[in-house]
Image (cartoon, rainbow, N blue to C red; front, side, top):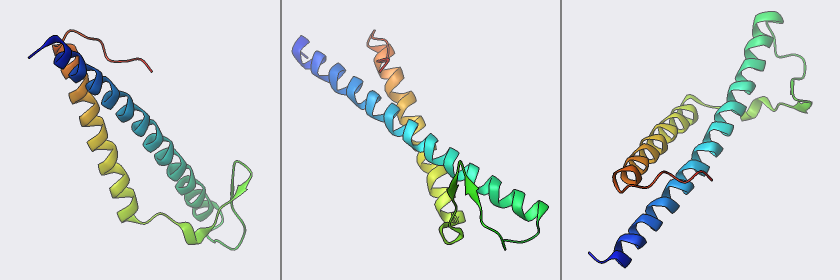
Length: 104
């Protein structure tokens, strides 16, 4: 394999790593948002035992019809696991080639 081919592979791997890192950050933000949503709902059930009042998170109203289903939560969790595994694989590929993973 030529040096040019190796450079192309390293460049592609570094790009895939950055993409995985960005996707993982977005998935973590979504998980945090859903977690906050569920905490607000849980608190209402624990303290008011009712949904008869309005809910807000960080000043924004919560629409109970947008309640995350178990399937949606499992899909998110599975995607986080898959992207994390891919990011770890890419990290190892870069280390094995003698390059540190990109920082951005």
